Length: 274
Image (cartoon, rainbow, N blue to C red; front, side):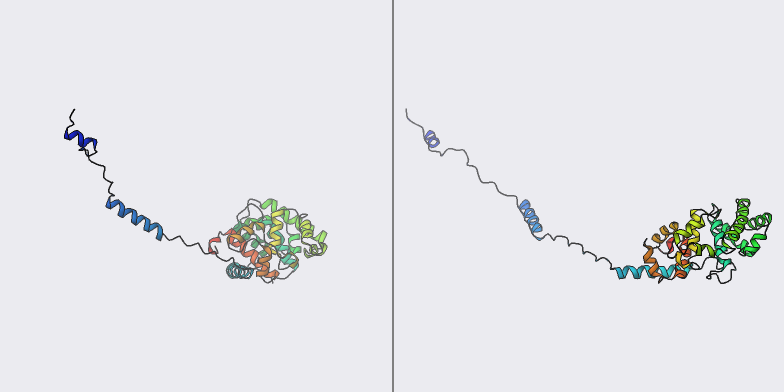
């Protein structure tokens, strides 16, 4: 059978079907790809953060001393210095006795303003003198405390003051400083003997140790545990020895620092030094 011309073309691969053409790339996508590739090559890695060198011991000590001096300059008065005591930095029997009943009154659950005002009234009445306190009546002591606003505990405290006078006269020959001698200047023994005084607990003992460092240097360095948190908030840290160094190991300056921290704590002035 004769083959047609069309059949011959199909057999030889020359049919009318179109051959596949290679796919052409999209110019826009190609350009975008090139930009991304370039960005990857030129991407800058973030610089590593510079490590700050820790401050050396000398820098820390200078910082503590600077902050200590600042606190002392503002609130570093000696305890009871403004209440009329003669030479409050000396270890007279009057000063020691006043610091005892200051600890007694200010450790009670009463506002520190009223407690301090009541201590002032006791001093104005001459009760820092053991004979004057001993000769006073319960009613007289109650009236003095009432004048100071110490009304909540006046009866109880009036009784405690009378017992304090008897105790000091009988056991320490009328001078609280003899307690220091009996304790052989040992802080732990001093605390032990102070507990024998009615009306003074652990808080009162801490207050006494805080305020008596200038007259009994063996108590230094000391900071009332409640004021140690204040010291941290003021940037002094919690190292008592560092604070001791900052005041040049001077018991009077240590006493002033303890008093200053107490004032800052009670009057909520921590933000002044933060």
